[in-house]
Amino acid sequence: MSDVAERADGYVLTLRGDERTYSRFLRLVAAEKRCCDWMKLELLRDGPAITLTIGAETKEGKAVIASMLEPLSELVEAPT
Image (cartoon, rainbow, N blue to C red):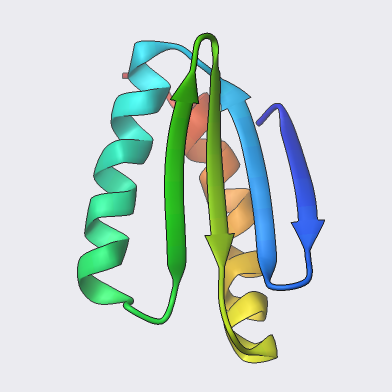
């Protein structure tokens, strides 16, 4: 993972912008939106950068998101 910035309600992840990474995170965001409507997700692609913003309205929700950061980094590093 290129960069993780903490916000009051969650995290902003900036990733390398290759097609494989974008496709994986696009599928992840779609799945998470279906199962976890408490989580705010936004995926943007701007040239070579992919930005994933993940937020929650509660401290508990933010803690769940924090526990996902390591598995998310593995998703970036995993081979296709």
